[in-house]
Image (cartoon, rainbow, N blue to C red; front, side, top):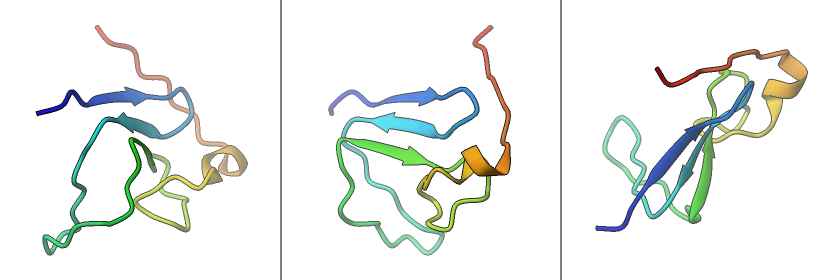
Length: 67
């Protein structure tokens, strides 16, 4: 199994790096995933669950720090 890393970007998406399988609620897999996938965290993307940069114009603010 390859290593997968998820980074929570300041005021932005979850950045998933590594080989993953992403499935919807019915278990169907999304295709054409790359080695790096940005997942929406703000809820404003028109391409959910993927980030389309909408967080920038929506004014989304969130900075998560590890404790």
